[in-house]
Length: 269
Image (cartoon, rainbow, N blue to C red; front, side, top):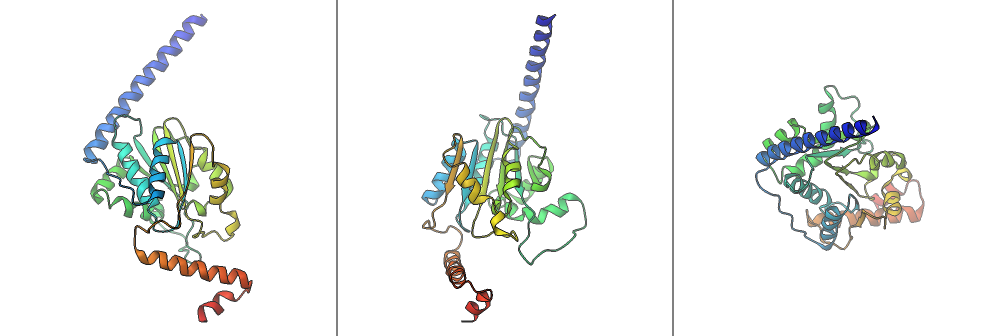
């Protein structure tokens, strides 16, 4: 009886594996029909090289870098390239982001279906993707659940298999929620976590998880931690470096003075 049951279980698992492989192959066929050319990725600085290598070699990559360093673009380009390859089982890309808005810029309740409500938070992903593929192609990938916008608020309880997860703006995720995010990885899953410690929009900045996860998982096997260098050349617009430096100087001055009205006084000086 025991042997018969074991044989049945094994045959069931084998059948499921065959069905799963057939489904993956069909999805890959659809993906290659939509993304007709491989996405070429050329690193523009040493930090981007490290990020590319980490994503290729690890199941989880956690990357911090200032605005304009190209971390989101690189992650998306590599995800599209991996999605198209037949040598892996990745057949979905989940785009994950907190719906935290800029401080003082909340828009309140938004009418409409879930997609209409979360789309504004996903625009930064879409803008980058449209630099690599046609807008109509992106629309088709979303319509066929190959590229899936996934607000962090709905990720609890999910186990995501055969996919690439890109979580951006993680500086706006609390430590507890980062734990929920990092434990969503299933089988054949690659997770890429991105953020910028200079752009925390949480009311209590000390709740930000980015510095915490960078420290916790540095040196952990199969998890890569990449801290993009402030010395790397900006890949978007040279003025961004100037703007960031000016703001960093301003905040350092404000922190040193410890004056509650320091922001106003410094700006008027």
